[in-house]
Length: 340
Image 1 (tube, one colour):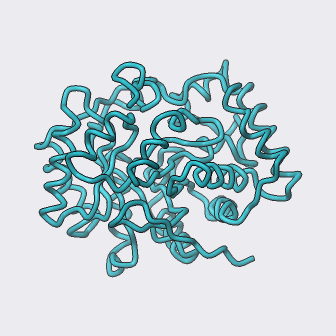
Image 2 (cartoon, helix red, strand yellow; image 1 turned 45 degrees about the vertical axis):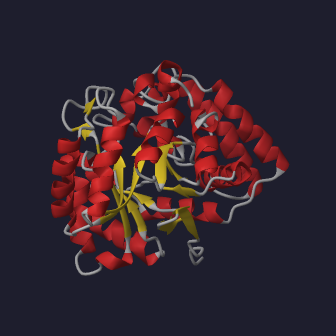
Image 3 (spheres, one colour; image 1 turned 120 degrees about the vertical axis):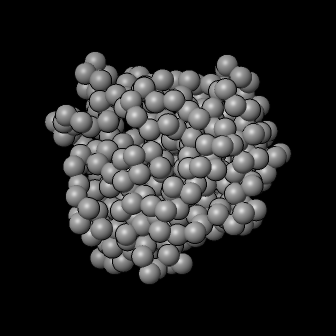
């Protein structure tokens, strides 16, 4: 079956992207080993399916994802919309890293990212996490200076609160905000998404299928040594059996409708974004082409009232926070610094 055409979405006035892009964290080995040759074949398959929006970060594999992507982009940079990120200091492993958002660091890191990517600009440059020790205005100002310098086309924030989004946007317009959003992770719906709808800023959802949990292919046995999911509360020994069973309700609805569970997960997100008036791009990541083909069917899958009702109620029953540290993500910090 041919892949569905990839619709475009206007994230901000100066940024158009695919409604479904590719999250390139997986090619850095985050969820298991994958060689460079295999990564390049996967990126070719993604390209053949019409996907042109690729998201990476300097953090992924300490630059490995950007480096592999740079090899892939050689001679065809203009075909793609490339997003990368700055603001998490590499090293220490999941749960032990720190945020850094001062102007000097941001300006230093863009040059290193551009070198690895083999390009002189990126289309979207995010602050990966807001630095609690640096006013977000300083970080946004530094990102804005990179736009003026021609190294960056548009800027964004990742896992920012509504209040931080407003403050940064007042310094330099944001094209997009990226955070986790899925059937299981819904904290952004309270403050972040309404703020984006008000300001005309697009949203990019990472981990839209719950790091694989919200798919037909998930099995607890697949999480082996070195898998970063072991650091996340959803996947701990005391929480995973319950959460996997909860995801089973989604899988049952997908089977009833005759679509992959991953597709139903994405279809739910697109419908929810439409109801909230937010321009949405999802950036699922995978190491396997057949997995990606299942994700693509989410662009055309349809929910009925029963599926919507079941999926709407799942998040309230999930056990564990979505992050190893609630203060590391927008939903966990809203109560600390103010929601809006």
